[in-house]
Every structure is written in C-alpha cells, then in structure tokens.
Amino acid sequence: ETGVTQSPTHLIKTRGQQVTLRCSSQSGHNTVSWYQQALGQGPQFIFQYYREEENGRGNFPPRFSGLQFPNYSSELNVNALELDDSALYLCASSLMGLAGGSTDTQYFGPGTRLTVL
Amino acid sequence: GQQLNQSPQSMFIQEGEDVSMNCTSSSIFNTWLWYKQDPGEGPVLLIALYKAGELTSNGRLTAQFGITRKDSFLNISASIPSDVGIYFCAGRGSGTYKYIFGTGTRLKVLA
Image (cartoon, rainbow over all chains, first blue to last red):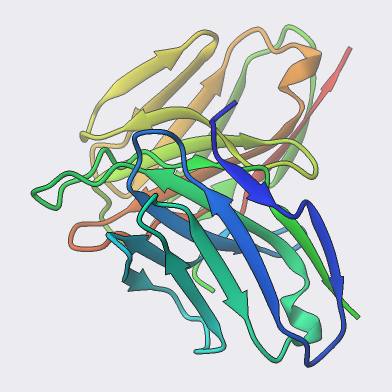
C-alpha cells in the first residue's frame, strides 16, 4: 500500500467527451506526476504538479490538463477524447524539497482504466 | 513516446532459478528506479538507485546503477511464483523532473 489513491477505478467514455480523473497523494508528499500507460507499454510521463503549478510536461497535447489543490491532491482532465486515449492513467506522488531537490522516489496509485469508444 | 530499452522482453524460468534483467539508455541518468507491476494495478517500487556504481538490495532483489550512468541491472535470486509480473526500470536525468520508463520485462515463473 503506497497510500496513493485514484478514482474512479474504471471509466468508459465516447469520442469527443471530456473526462476528469482524481488522485490523492501519499501523506507527506507535495508533488504529483501523471502517466499514461497504453496496453503492453511502459508508463509515459504526461505532466507533474508541484505547489499547485505545472512543473514539467511530456509530449501530450494541450487537451490534457491538470490541477493540484492545496492539500496536494490532483486532477487530470482530458478534453475531446480520442480512441487512442484509451489507457491506464497512473498518478505518482513524491516529495520535492524546499530547495527544489527531491527524494526522486515516486509511489504510484492503482490507476484509472479509461476506455474510449 | 521515448522509452528505455529493457532486456529481455520476456522470460520463462523455473522456480528457484536466479533472474537477471537490464535497462539501457542513450542518455546519462542521475536516478534509476525499478518497479514491478501486476496486471491491472499500478507499479510498485522495488529499489531506488542514486549514485553510479551503487548496489542496493531489497530481500531477494539486487539492483545496480551502472558506472557509465547509462544502464542499470536487476537480479532476482531464488525466484518464486509470486515474482511473476512485469518489471519496469525508470530513469531521470539532471535538470528534469521527468522519468522515462523502460519497455518492461515480463517474467513468468514455472513451478
């Protein structure tokens, strides 16, 4: 048990719809990273949030956006869903130090399985 | 998207055998992490490595941060059926918060 929780567990949407996925970070952690994992692939970095701001972004279009709240929980929003967005969406929490350093150790939640029809 | 090369892609082994797998990168990394993922679940952290040459153990698992900083290795000794799963490496370079994951090694243990 990492203490990282995600909701919902599963979700089915149709093309063009919008979706919001949620993540609660591990107690004591202040940073959340989101990943997309397609079937048979390793996780791909979407973006990271620290102190309620986006701290880095992978090669994903702007229709992937996020939020981090004062309690360090986070949301991933995807607009205009496409079939290729079907994947397991993972969030990982970690602790970023005040000096910008990090423990570098990310702990993952169980993921949200998104299916786009 | 960018992924690290993991080898082997998959392997079948007999219970009790030792297992070795590796991960290579074209870039230098400052941190290597090794995860195990069971079907439909999130990756679980096994070992974290922070320094070139570092050798770290976690029970029957041992991982090493390659001296070139472009590779890492994971060994599992005396494998048991619950070792079945997909093992991922992840690396992070300097000046970035982004982790790049490997393609995964699928391990199957024959009792």
